[in-house]
Image (cartoon, rainbow, N blue to C red):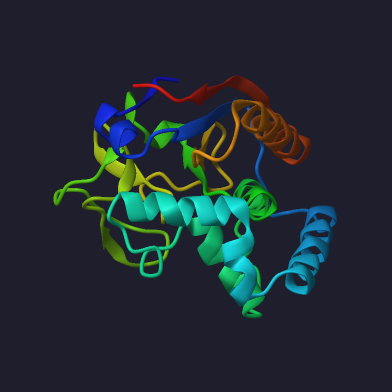
Length: 224
């Protein structure tokens, strides 16, 4: 899987990296009751342990807020998807169930407080580049809005922008018919390579435990 990070982005945000997992032979469905029960229990534990006022004390959220500020992005207007999801949970909103892969992807984002993206490989046109968006980088997003990604971190293929640590596009979304997936973890500078390896390993095990399939490739991407 050919994924690179643009040099300009790395210059503006030193230490930024991506965790990449490429899955094949997956079998998706609605989330099984076992997974839903496990996730609901974890969500309740988050509500007991955290509040909106203490989010700034979570290292991975704090590091991403700082990273956004370095890039000139207001983190109170454009929040990392992990923080936006956690905020909705803490505000008492129900978890939005999609399918067994997307639900696990969101679960992992809540566990690690990091933006996780999940994409249907068959809807991508390689290669993939992580870079800062321009005024031409717009797309219909999963939140139902048309978003403009100028100045924000994006993932782009030969057909244009499709993902970001803020919100992903409809174009590359994952359905129960998807069999080959690309999972991208947007990692701020505070996370060590050793910790990132652990996150990649545990994420892959959970995804395959529920959805079968294999890891075709995994990597930490930290250079252009």
